[in-house]
Image: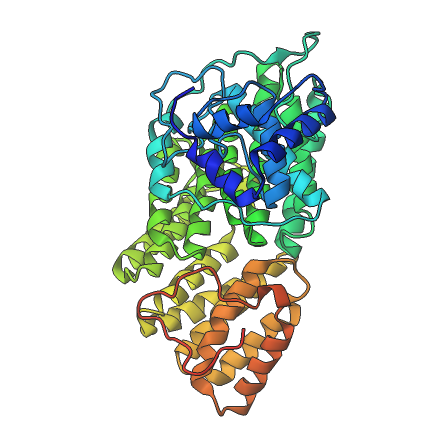
Length: 509
């Protein structure tokens, strides 16, 4: 007991709208449903949790997390409630504070606990049809300061995790996790193949349709990690967990669940480091950086890219380095730093062509090919064109090259290319070509479950306002307004960049 109010719990309690007596009764009822009928909580105890900072014993924090998750329609973890988990903290200083409420970084067994708890809560929201954006995104600088030194060190030997065959049963860290059991190489191979299937589906159709399946698979892997397998199998399991967590994060980002996505990216970075794959950890953090640029926070993105690049280690391949550079360039473009962006993209091109291909790329890099390099360059130049219209011409050139190189099964990427190309044409005062490419995007955009494609299309829509009176553009605006899903007819999360063109007449979506 700290003697100080638990402000995080108090804030959530106020949002939930319960009385202290109601919460006490709900805790007892939920605990019984979770197999703890002996739990007896009363109003005075709830008051001590909120007003005096008392930390209840297990399973109460997990019970409270489940209750608030269901009540608020978003994932609420034990850390969100202001409770500190008990257990080994690892050899590091205590970095838990208001800027780092999750107490990053996590020890090995803590990563398993967070993974299974968070996926279990996420699945519970899916079952009940609840959605929500969750708490605010953590700042890139906060994540960087918490994880900088940790990412460069080797993970500590795990303790407190059961070895296969041990009859002792560890307490479950989350919900919906099946009874954990040791697995062999064949099961892990099947899991690795499933990652490839999910990854291909996401690239083709967007994150909305298979997100729950990926989260459920990740939850099961968390159960497997509750056992200590032989080192070579344990590393592969951590690798599967990292890949699934990145996919869960990317799919969550794709449908607008931004804080949920960020949490999965952080989980992925932890899992990759536990598996000894620092380049994978860096790539996971680069996803969080891309998310930040999309949301109009390029300064946070640059903080995360610094961590991603420095934490990737010496084993990162040139092509992976090229990919990281393109994300950094996009952030620079968003801030209007044209010279820095061009320099960074030049380095990306040099790194890409220097990759001799004598070392097979990891599975998670196989999606980044020459088409993606041009696609990211098109996006960076198109973003810079909001500050410097002369960047619209190279944006068009790279977008066309990306489209020529795109292979089948990359429908979402093609839509992004068409939108970048159409936007660049509008900025370059070529409405005829802009209309053509915008319609190509509109033809297939409804076949995906990606909210991000609609976000980008809405940004392009704003550029059409300068061409009022052009019959084709007026028709295009009307078609976009009709096609836009009703739940997405709101301004995108991204802030308007300084110097960007704004809509001169009323915008209806």
